[in-house]
Image (cartoon, rainbow, N blue to C red; front, side, top):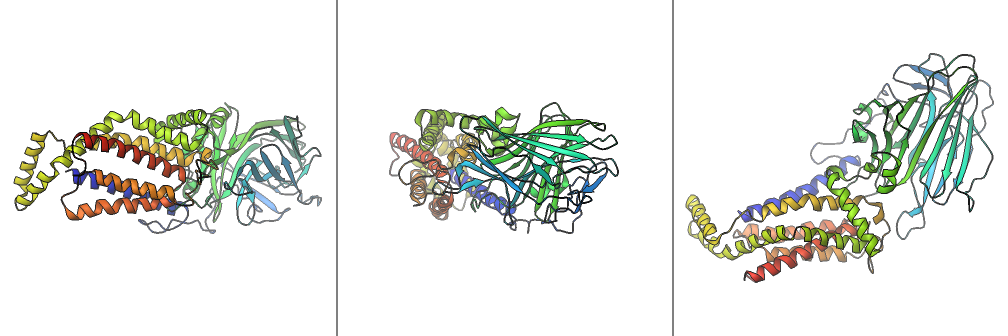
Length: 564
């Protein structure tokens, strides 16, 4: 029974890793190991009814006509004031603060590039992390504009040329904020004025969208706040683990919802609320449009090309009379997934840090990890200390499991003899085995429950370490300069593999020769995967293994089964 239990646990664990690998394949557009190729978008697919289908977004030219399709109708206009023939050439302007370097395009006042100055691509790299980008290799931008359901009414949108107001472009020492202002070319006399305000030390940008109705009729504009990107993964990742990349949203009623790229066109999410936000999520970083609450808003997703996706909030601005103006203030967050900072910005925003389905356990574990880091000053030692805390919390539960294993090891010779004696009488063999277990007070399943009780906690810790941006570039000791990447010399994976083999040696030997060989092969196969895991994850598993070995060895020695 113990042999079966142990084999079952190994099978579950290996299958979990296989499923993680398959998930990575599907997420990165590769064929699934179980269901063929991942469905791919085709350029011939018709856009959904809520899609912002704007020529130029995927290669059109300024000055072309544009049509924005909304849930209630169609608004048609020109993207550059083409009727006047005075469209200015596209310009770009770059704003630099102490934490970001942001580049805007005068066409639509769109944020087309954002460098995070406090984060490098890797511990040894000189290049900053680039979150937003608009190049042939990668498309990821933040857009705003106006639409309306009124027939024949054209409004400025994210393709409309804008004039950039003069002013400083770098946050000066002693200054706390920096402002950048765009004013659109008139579209039938109507204008959109965008004002971006950057603040020192902040990864948020205050965005004021002001509509000026210079036309002769009342207009009911709707402001859209949109994030658009391609479906390429944020980083190379690993063949043995994957993290979510794609749109996400939150409302108080629907809570946090991830929307895989393949599901974007189906719009299987909350459609409207007076609260919530939309985001684009990737490993370690995220962007999100935030609005004051309560304020009515619609949530829309769309697939705008073979590998182009958008998520947006659309906010009605009410009726604006001729000569009047109206504005809506929003906030654009674009930066690292730091829990405390995200939680302070908007309800539920910390959920973009993807802990999976064990969020309720992972959140307090991260809280404890940060407190240990505050005491020790090193994330590597904080990981070691956290594993020690978990092992201490489950000490008596583990002791019960290891005592059960030690008893099973003590009676293993008797069980092997019974199996040989009654190999042709399986029913009688089972009866004799149960007799021995009763006499020796051995519970064959005694080591099973403690393991299953602890598994959710250690799986949660796994996702905490995999998801925490704090691990990026964080050193531990000696050769480990970055806990978020693989050990460059494979020292930790080798030690982890050796510790797994040592655990097998301490466990009862299966009487079946085939099972016995499998128990030695599995740690090697399993350990091989850790050669590609981030060093922080390997450190966590290695520490857990070493503490388990120490506790099991002490118990085995006390019960006189060491070396048997």
